[in-house]
Image 1 (cartoon, rainbow, N blue to C red):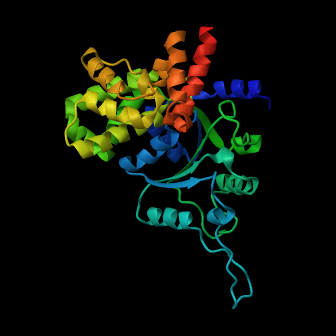
Image 2: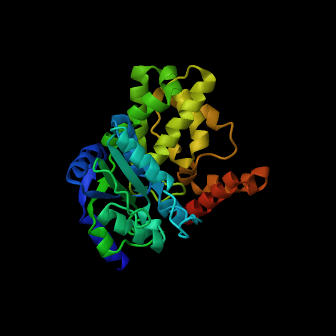
Length: 339
């Protein structure tokens, strides 16, 4: 299938927002239906599914991209008494069965299924149909377990293979669309449960404002940013994690301090922020301490300043660093456009 057809097929899928995924999982659990979630890289598919643990699900995660055959099927072990070679039960199946015995509803989450090798895909296709492994015919998957798979469309990435039509028929297939509004709720939940230092340093009200500001400013690059690193929910969560580390060291932060410290770690995307007027002076003063300005600043420079900056970087020790190389590439691109 060519890329245009792939893209059209992908765009025709039913769209769901991130906040609708838990309800969809519950419906698939009740109907014993497998769920396949497509979505752009980094849009939060894995995070949303794994966060179902906070809602009482026992989530067992397998990475199809790195999973070997033994991890899925188990290891063959020779039995001297019977002269046979049965397969030992794989760890993930032991966890699934133990969770079922404990009365927990479960999610078997298979991430990046489109990156699995053909043998793994064949085994998964049988398991999705018969709800059992061919190497463990005496054990069926529990009724209170839903299988959820996630994949990136080949319209968005060149990695992996398009799933076969027979395999696709085993799923209810949807496309997850991440929006700034849906991500705000998820981000606040993550901060409440996993990033306590940020919230403690900023306070409840300032943390909410900080999250809204960050998501709003990042969102203009959400879908069509083609720069190095890209910008998506994963990038923003990395930004929040960096802010949390800053808060842990400092003990107390202003929003401006959190942004200024985190921007040095996360990368160019943070420099696109529309900084509040009260923080502009602080940011400019600190930016002058650095030889290399943000990529966004470089792109906005007039030609004369670009020429001067290029010469300054080339005559410094920064010229051979990763930061210096990226800056020089950005300068060259900006110079071409300016001419």
